[in-house]
Image 1: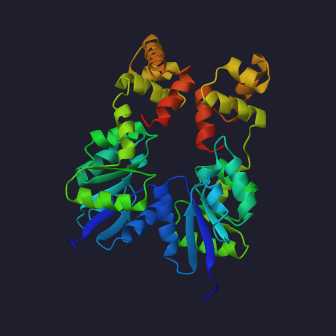
Image 2 (image 1 turned 45 degrees about the vertical axis):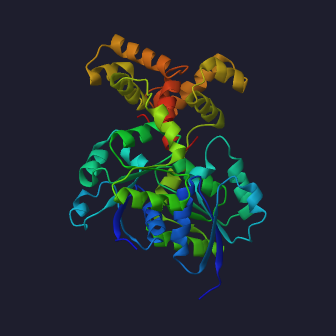
Image 3 (image 1 turned 90 degrees about the horizontal axis):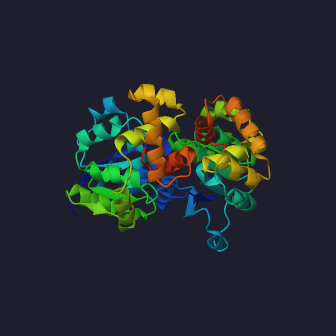
Amino acid sequence: MGEMVRIVVVHDETLLRSALAHLLRSDDRLDVSSQCPDADGEARVTPPTDVCVVDGECLTGPDDGRAVRLRARYGDRLVVLTTAKRPGVLRRAFDGGALGLVDKNAPAHRLITAVHTVAKGERFLDETLTVALLEGAEMPLTTRELSVLALASQGAPIAEIAARLHLSRGTVRNYMATAIRKVGARNRVDAIRIVQSAGWT
Amino acid sequence: MGEMVRIVVVHDETLLRSALAHLLRSDDRLDVSSQCPDADGEARVTPPTDVCVVDGECLTGPDDGRAVRLRARYGDRLVVLTTAKRPGVLRRAFDGGALGLVDKNAPAHRLITAVHTVAKGERFLDETLTVALLEGAEMPLTTRELSVLALASQGAPIAEIAARLHLSRGTVRNYMATAIRKVGARNRVDAIRIVQSAGWT
């Protein structure tokens, strides 16, 4: 028997957060608490934590402040849950330095192994995620092209995208055309679909 | 102490399915097994079930065969997990006759209460979902308008949508324009975003 590992579970949905905490408590070497991703105030009074288990979807979206806060608080002692269908989420977790990457389709004991591995400061990468991680490395869009698509996906027309990014309409149209071509999409809607489903925005 | 309630947990992601099963097993009046949504073969050898707990996201998407299969197997003894942000998912579960609707943001004991309530053949509806359910009742689009948007969201151009639905291009454009106006969107991309995020497609 080693020492107890103190972990915190971060998930947007209360019910699934509780469920993950229950699963982890099935290992009696784990001391588990759970919190919602934006519980900044609470975090100050929680006990010291060895590992943070977080749903990768909590690290996406326009507010990447969460990802920054979690990294500031837990460093590389993050176990991120995701799937091969979300290479963008995977890539960002990896680039952000998270030591653990666990497939949401893995059996429960994999998550427990991952937590103990990361608690020792070692890397844990589910083999089912490796190919997706490499594909995510090849994200073909520049930051600007991705910003244009992200704004378009929220329903912004060209003129508004141009104003928001301090670009001319012609330049926005050019970025859009390049982005559509690069991701192999048939049109603007198709490009947005491809980029969103990969978790790149 | 009442009798044991036999439940099955259906969730696309193995890890979260296991986690929900762990949470439910914390009540020793529940006898829990778990399966993936398309495990048709397995289902024949599983023991009789009183209640099926299913993630509402498993009931959406182009393949609504799953929803039909689950209803055929478990009747109204379904507890569907969803959120107020997904009125379309909520509405479909309600219209499909599921007795239980539980908010994913509810505390864990609500799910356990819901399971016992539905096992007795009674309705359980989280109050936090009521408003969203009523809003979902007001889905403003016709089936045709929704089909046009659904095909567009997959990246299909007007000509292809017209061919798939056996309509003229002009008619498709009219449906699209009506749909954009009805959901209060600014353009096609915005309409798709609104309809998808509500869970109507």
